[in-house]
Image (tube, rainbow, N blue to C red; front, side):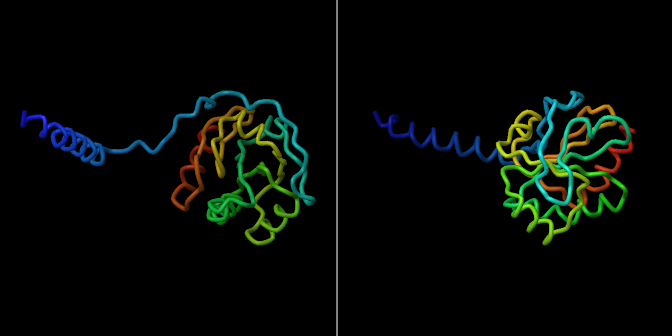
Length: 174
């Protein structure tokens, strides 16, 4: 009869031990994208910013690899990655932006405050392209080769230590 009182304690110790074990295991921080090596879907987005054209799949066909950056003016990590996007632009990387659920006024204010690394910015008002290419949030950046295929997906904001990796991936897909 007294052993029944030890069952909750045994269960608690088991789950506490399991949680402790799981906390000591190495974590996989990458998410495998189902879109790698697949063609960009067809899209043709209106401009999100008065100073630049919109974006379409045709902008990625022919020529050098480019970055496709999914971002929004209301996204705090997008502010954090702005200096790294400028650094990539200074290295000669063409970056095409897709503004998610944004207004032209907010896009303009964001670019005035944080810089404009983009050659084009398309407006994805209902996140249709974002969902279609497998982006779960903002910001996300994709390396697109000259044939219009997705070669690499960077989830989250680009940090300073991510710039060399992106430059290497762009070089590898030339």
